[in-house]
Length: 114
Length: 115
Image 1: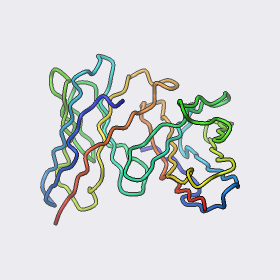
Image 2: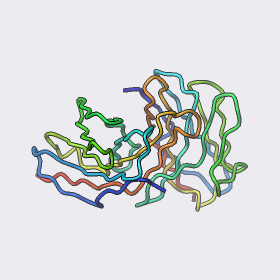
Image 3: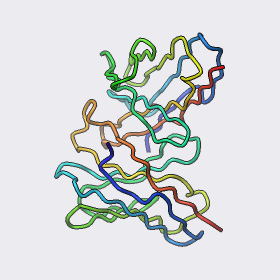
Image 4: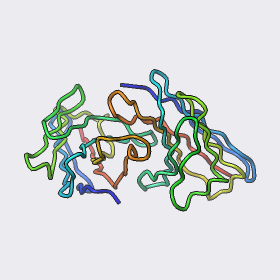
């Protein structure tokens, strides 16, 4: 079973920041938080991941609370192409073999509207 | 990011035939690849873990004789759906771990329709 909880759906206005929350209250010390998204009829796309520090890349920012029990993915300027299902996943850092598997929950369906 | 290529993207076949799906890591070597299946309006479900040079590890409920996996090189894994039936129609997705970053990258998926 997925170890994360996400809202089922969210709306965001085009050009505004999209803030997607994720709860992972049972996260272990060696588990990372990964975010992926899946646009309709495509394979999942990696967005960002982190352990305990906030992370930023060209796609998004990841804010992890100090107790690591929750995190927020931020898309700073959402576009219509960001409409997708966003998955928050926790996984151990030692990803050899089957431990590398990502367990997908239901994710959050983000709809970016004009 | 690293690229995983999956082919074909879409296939229609008759019931009873076999279909092979290829998954390639284009710019990195992948000792471990994964095969997932996704039914409409559902999330991805892991079918098997494929390690280069060894037998694949199948998840509970996945028939290993029906879904043949071969991971003969560090850049190629194949999934063969043998004697396909309409209930095997689904979206099949492969992924590979880029060891350097620990990130799992996914192919674009293969939509299989069995008539």
